[in-house]
Length: 353
Image (cartoon, rainbow, N blue to C red):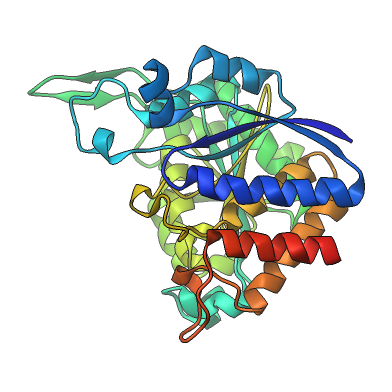
């Protein structure tokens, strides 16, 4: 297969973890005879510094003309600490989602037996947890009308029926591929936007009689994720709730450095880690590259290259079992491995497989 990949390394640790993701992709391409070309493009703080725009038109064109986008992370403290900044790195991420029509964010939450001890939750609660959070990406408060002055501010949680229906259908399709259980998360007892979500979901439910559908308020879902994560199979929710719940899911796995994600919709799909740019660690060879590498696996699965994706997952599992890990997930007394060393170990495993 021929694949044209747009590479957006972004800020902070982004370039370091992206280097390992591309190396793994190259190893897979060589082993299975695929032809992969890459085109790098600027985004986030790096793009602001270059051209004053966190998602320049040139970057958009690169993404639009690619088969997939491999994205790392954006964010820089100099913007985080300046409340008056009119242009921010994160605006580039929102612009990319909007311009590419990426309305569905798919985030798997899965535990690794050898890392259960790294989670703040009890082993018996999280063992065998395996679910997917599907977050609506282009509506809600992040994109609704906004206002702010010195005395008042508001954000509008705006949704339309077509926006809600299309993300629910994506969620039902995923549920059918898994254990046929869908949980719709909202706040319909308080929010009008959530009542629309529930109304549309109730109307669609009879069209999917083979899927068990249940409904849960977001505060209850947040508690249930920690108290009984094995309850969930596929969870779907609106933009703001999804942003919070998916990050909460990272404490189940024990590290955000293990969580990949995919964003799909009307145009080129994007594959990225869920973690941020961790600028404090930039250039120090400390960052865990596994989420970036697993994002490559998700990308291959998107193109139905299941055997290739399975080999990457096998290599990641083997690296964890061999204690080839970055410091934040290393066992006590374990050898020190950096970003480059973990990536190189996984590439070597693929080459020898």
